[in-house]
Image 1 (cartoon, rainbow, N blue to C red):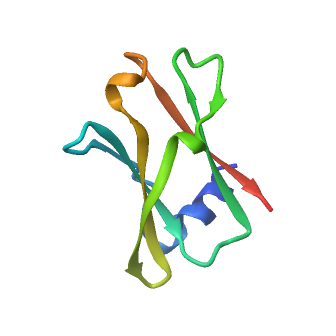
Image 2 (cartoon, rainbow, N blue to C red):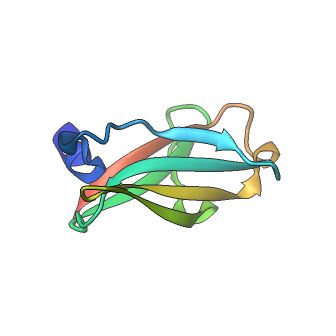
Length: 101
C-alpha cells in the first residue's frame, strides 16, 4: 500500500507526502494533499474517526477548492471542510486511502 500512495502522491518524483492541515479565517479546516498529476488510475479516499476504531467516509464533508500545479507533473489538492472545525469532535483523525481503479 505504501508504494500505491507513493505513486499517487508523487513521492518517487520528490514531492513528498506532507499532508498539510490548517484552519482558514472562517473556521473551516483546510486539507492539502500532494498529488502526482496524471496518475488517474489511483483514487484517493478520505476517512475520519473520533476513536481510531470506527472509520467513516468523509469525502463529502470536504470540497475541492483548488488544484495547484508544482511543475514536473506534481501538484497539490486543496480541500475545505463543509462545516466549521467547531462542529467536529474534540479529537478527529483523518486517513487517506488509495484505491486502484
